[in-house]
Length: 611
Image 1 (tube, rainbow, N blue to C red):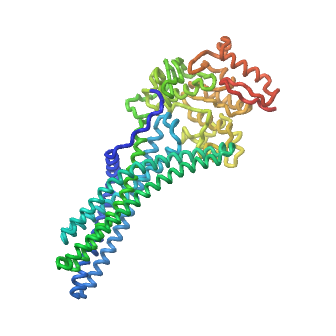
Image 2 (spheres, rainbow, N blue to C red):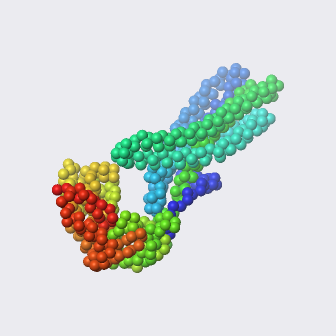
Image 3 (cartoon, one colour):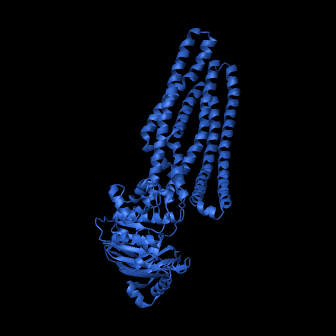
């Protein structure tokens, strides 16, 4: 199928969010269950003081029974110690549970993202993915941490308080519950309104982070073009949008807080009016009245908590929405029916392959060729002719719109990607190195390779010439993207990495483009050794590699216009001969006019070497 951009997934329905939250809670059910037990202990101990307030007023003060003071004080001290211990343990248990859930979610997201098709990364900013993995997962702490338990605890406290309040004065309590029902309706509407705002915040935050990541990563380009002010304005605009979104959520949550205060005030007015008459008419004792007020406060506290915790859980649901937008994307290895590939000879064939990135705009048109095992195929053509797309199909980064790519006669789209790609060695035009040592980067494909093999690969790739000049030799840290090495040095490290991988299929995409003539001459022997017995595909603009290829494919506008060996194509007097003669003419006087532009086989130019 074509690698076209898919429309953004629709937001998840609330029912799906509840389903996902239930699955998350079930995964961490044991810690949450322990948390609920500790919560019950905490709440039970917390009821001692309110419950005994009646006896304090009616018996100790009203009946002047001083002998009850110390027993009551001792009971309160014990209850307080139990409550403090339970509260501390609860915070520890739920804090660990929340962090464990966040860590698991991040690991799951990272694994899923890494296995998405390359086409997804072509259309998605790096910073957006970082935000999805690192920031969105933070919200779930409120589902498996203090948030959900405090919500449950608040509900439990409210239920117990209501039972006691009904016992003390059912008329007053009925009115109180009617007021709370109004508050519940307002809260439901508010959380439904706030949820998309929280989702939008995640999106804006991801966009701002994405642009900031690009700006910092490309700081040399920014400085070279004096674009600091422009990047500041772009970031400031995004930061302001984020501020406005946060301000809206603050307005919503603070409005809920203010409304909850109004509800509590209304309940207080009802208690004063109806409770006061009940007390004056001897329908309640002073102790009953005090106890009633204390339990009303215990009922009101969960109301305040719910308004705060509810917004946190709403934010968690928004985070789950965004996480699941990613998780609903099909992974490359999602097809479990793919065949195992125990051995690879290396026969690659394109059979009537057509491919397009954007619908209706073909990049390759009916491509047919065969690359026998152990052969070298060179791809030549102007920029945009489809050379890199052919390489992408060979590496199974894309799937044809029509036709098929085969490995040893088997359709590549039907084999397990891990089995196939583990036989690939790649040296791309833009060589990516990780922020680690030179040895770690060379051993990336074979992380457990002995140091001697790493050094041997570096020797073949002529890396020792610059490695030995560093104080820490192979343990020298190359910096992010290998920034502490020159382009040619990075390219040689990438070649050493491919040598150590010992692949059956080798991809050389402008493998010597960053090397000067002297360095290229040094490394050609290593490349020839590496190519022996391997199916090799080469994109190169210099003749040294092209000449020895078993077949050369000349591409123009997504079609193969010429094919054959170097000598065969020279005899055709066509496009290849034209490119060759233009380059050869300039190579004859390469050192005569230093700095003059030199045409290459891809239609680009390079600058002649200076004497």
